[in-house]
Each structure stands twice: as C-alpha cells, then as structure tokens.
Image (cartoon, rainbow, N blue to C red; front, side):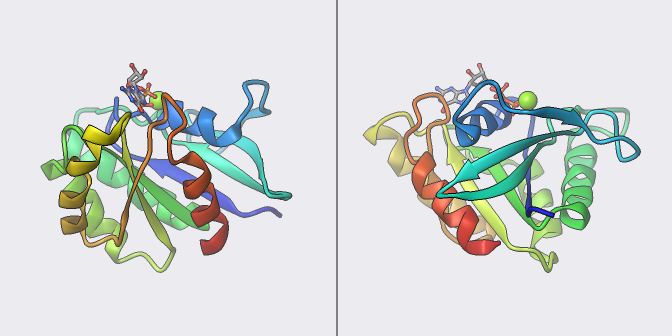
Length: 162
Ligand code: GDP
Ligand code: MG
C-alpha cells in the first residue's frame, strides 16, 4: 500500500487548493473512504515517480464542540490514520489558538509532521513565515497554493519523510 499524507488545518487556510496543487492535475482519482468518516476524501498523487495518497480533511468543519476542538480532533484522527501529517497555516493570519492546540496534538505524534505556511504569494509574504517556528513543528515551508510557489519543495519534503 502507498504511503498516506493527511492535510489538516482550519477552514479557509487553503487545504483543498494545496491538495489540488500537490496532485498537479484536476482529474485525480477521488474516492470516499468508507467507515472512517464520510467526509474524508483520498486522492492518488505522483511525484518523482513515487505514488502516495493525499487525504483532504476539509470535511471536518466546526461543529458543536467549536472550531478548536474539531480541528484538534481532525489532527488526532489524521495522526492515527496517516503516515505523515501536513498542517496548513494561513501565513497572513499566523498561528492562532487553534493552530497552537493542533500543534500540541501533533507534537505528541510519532508520525512526521510538515508545516506549510500558505498564501505566501510573493516576496512580501515571506516575512510572515518566521513566526510559525513558535509552533514547535520545525521549519515552516512557504507556499502559495494559488500560484504554485514552493509546491515542488514541499513535495520533495513529503517524499523525504515517508
Ligand atoms: P480550505 O477550507 O482550507 O480547504 O481552503 P480552500 O482551499 O477552500 O481555500 C480557501 C480560500 O483561500 C479560497 O478563496 C482560495 O482561493 C484561497 N487560497 C488558497 N490558497 C491560497 C494562496 O496560496 N494564496 C491566496 N491568496 N489565496 C489562497
Ligand atoms: Mg477544503
């Protein structure tokens, strides 16, 4: 079975846009994963000749427990079902309490965790990225899911941690 990357983060940080960018094609195979949660969507990805699965966790929207609890639960589930986890943060917003809570969960993970600082569309955005070191998840990787900036480096990093 191919390795699985789970993409987690608050709504609107650009998870789904980044997933499409990582797939590099729109006609990627979409499959529901029954029995886990009906909102989990897995895609086949291919980079440098290696296949892996990307799970977009966008279906986990805030529920009665509130945003922080539901995103933390999302991260917890991802941690147990994926080989690696990618936390996506909107670099323009920075780390909110939600990201801090998720980071606490992910730091306990035995799985590798990657940190994407999204919406770094141009050089001006780069200055926002450094503050994300405070999450304790290692180096924040600047990307622009919208324009594709940094996505090759991110894919290289993903393959390295599998
Ligand atoms: P999700 O809820 O985390 O899956 O976020 P989406 O992928 O649906 O994106 C939320 C919004 O952010 C959309 O309007 C996207 O076009 C926008 N967005 C995503 N990535 C970028 C980016 O790199 N730069 C900018 N400027 N906007 C982005
Ligand atoms: Mg989404």
